[in-house]
Image 1 (cartoon, rainbow over the protein chains, first blue to last red):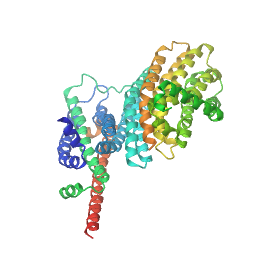
Image 2: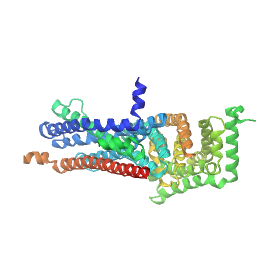
Image 3: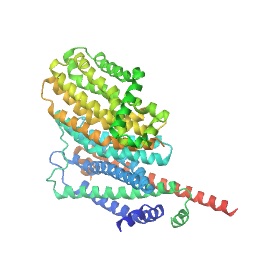
Image 4: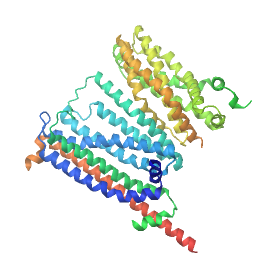
Length: 246
Length: 229
Length: 56
């Protein structure tokens, strides 16, 4: 029974209709969660003991970093699905993830660097988390570069799928090795966010931002994939009805 | 004699012998990455103070950056000739496990481009101020490291078969994946030079080499199949 | 209000971060919608071209 659902989802017209209907159900809750997170985080959370009001950057830095990693996993998973089950829609999803993931990785890096300035004294300190983010950005750029360099769409789909799968296996290895490398040199990383004893007034807005950004990503992904699916299904008849409904 | 009646080990041995014979005819090609490694490691003292005690500090970095860049250069050799003259397609179609044959090809590639680095590394390390006692640790690290780099790089080279003119793209694909090898290899080298026990990073380096040897052939086979279309 | 904007002295760091985030979030939304609209336009064009071609 689950297989029927799975393959139905892979059919472009069905996916397009479903994505069109679902997008508002992700977009509006995302907006509300982020509003709650912003108001709670900027207005009501008490200042941090060590970092004062500077810690409030976490409400945008953490969601960006979370997105950068989650989007890569989604990209690799849908690429694997596309490779194994030869599903064009899955490849379209993977292709649509790349720019979103790369832009939020860059955002995580920039916000991390700006946050680091008052905390470390410099913009860059080879902090393990930021260094991992930098390498993740290179992985995204490599994926996008490979896709771009192959003319044939089907080949580009499958080659970049192999790359994404190899990449996702490497992400934990790279992350662990960078943490290991950094711990040797005892760089003073005062950036201690994610403290286990965060009071609810600090934590709840953070969770709301994380959830809100996740839903926002899904809405974005659905929109981009709709566009990608339309572009790929050049002359299919279902497009007529789909476009009539908008 | 149909190819599928030959056992896989025999087929792999035939392939490796053939690759070695071909490479010997163009020995210059295989020596190029070695020459590049020596040049790169020479650049470091030239751009710094040639005081040995200072060089000793940067020796791990110089050795491993040199090894990484040299292995990147060497990747061009892996599939270039066979990709062009159709031999790769023959391998894919001959009925033997493709992943296994590609692993055999990568093994020969390591023998020709990685092993020379292992043999020369002690020389380069000494030139950069490393003490005699550091040599076993450095040898072990470069051995494991070059094996891992050959495997990781091969996957990149397989993917690059699908691209017309790759150049810097191959570097962008391979280098981030090679970072763990760099980190653990350089750390092992640094510990060896300081006379400290090198077991921890060597184990991790070994783990990466084993993981690469297990997973890379499958990724390679997938990538090369896509590239051969 | 001024205390809120001053962010305890960290204003020069906090507000640029939020501005950057708003920029990236907004850019992605606009880009995605533009891609969809142009894909829909293209598809409409192709479908009507097919229709006229088959009507001839």
